[in-house]
Length: 256
Image 1 (cartoon, rainbow, N blue to C red):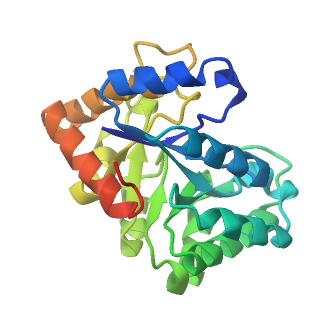
Image 2 (cartoon, rainbow, N blue to C red):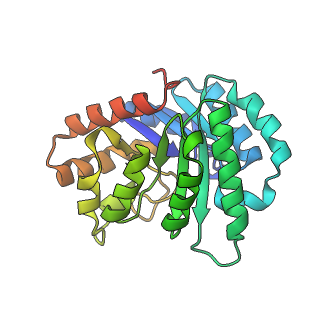
């Protein structure tokens, strides 16, 4: 079982990072991907990946951090991308939920980092929140650069929108939200092509039931896998095997 998206670099884990990784392995989660949100944070994700054999990382700029980004940073991102523990570019994308974000800047940075992902031959992980139409526009514009795989993390769009993203052979990951009592998008989970389904925790956020309200950890991934198994009417072991295989297919550098 692989946690394809989390934030092990979050300060909440500063005093217990060794224990977080140890507990993850003891609970059957064999690896996790620490996702970057800015240049500085991406450096932190790589530092973690170099410390722990079972931790890999992505480097990127979250839409909420685009004000911190400058194209000159691509030189430093390029150096990091040479390391085999860097397996993707992310998280990047669009977030229109909060007021005050520069949407044009978000789209420009998203385009630049997709172009960068092509240059370094790595897949991209997209954060898209209340911005699916514009995200599709960017992907259509950048289709020629989407040569190494696309993943939408914490997918929250409709089944119809999913079919649009399928045109890019996208992967989709789901986290703790699927365990919430108010989750009403089981049809979306069922609509995902089986060979494109991934698991994630997005820790320390979106803690699954029955731990909701507490800090999230990679060790809670089995709760998410169990709920996905119920939705798809599969055994948990089947979901584990399926999503692990998919993760290795998307992330060519994921050697574990």
